[in-house]
Image 1 (cartoon, rainbow, N blue to C red):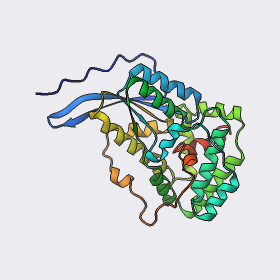
Image 2 (image 1 turned 120 degrees about the vertical axis):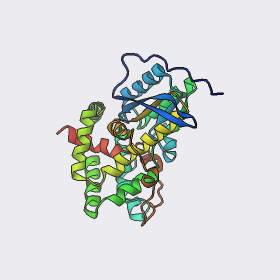
Image 3 (image 1 turned 90 degrees about the horizontal axis):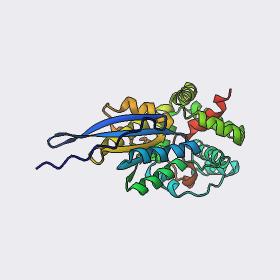
Image 4 (image 1 turned 90 degrees about the vertical axis):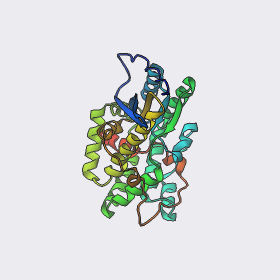
Length: 298
């Protein structure tokens, strides 16, 4: 005897937080496709108070059974983070000299900490809000992003020697030329708009064409894969991801994804031991957000 169909999702209000992608998928069962699952994929800015409010509003409106967030198991400590120490540039350089971090990892960590230290909202606050709201309605929380170690190793491997030097220098200059607190808040809120963020990513990609595929495209594919796997477990799913991932998740939604290929470590080396995890794990993809702040005000 077939199991009863789950109840339909509650009515969707006419106005939901933006930017938002509404996607649908049916799980394949032994007797054919199952009931349709509706996904509400919300794009956020990682250090935005407005994004936190958007997460709250969306989860309370659609009452999902599962909430997927753009974190991996390595970045799970973000969910209990209550304070962020800003490391010095000297500490970043020491990590590089000791071999415990690549230049990209160390400078990236330092830059993200500088961004978070200037704002009232710690990086990743929207994920902590999503966890709280999910628990309030009895929804399950799923970590939906690819391993940070894999992402950073694949990014560094993809860059040429010249791109590695140039990227490290760009991150360093961005940190040293940081906007003041008021300017940074204004620019981050602008970047929630998909057209502005997309343009910033495109501009960044012109200088570092090798970086965007492992940093953005492969993670879009991975999160689309992880979301589709949830079709057999829920009739309504909310996903909380960086706004720059919305377009890619849409584009790969109906495509075949070789998840084994995009989760493989580069063949010639493993990433070095790294002690700065709690800082650098705050927002994968945040390098685009941080660097774009300077570009968007030009």
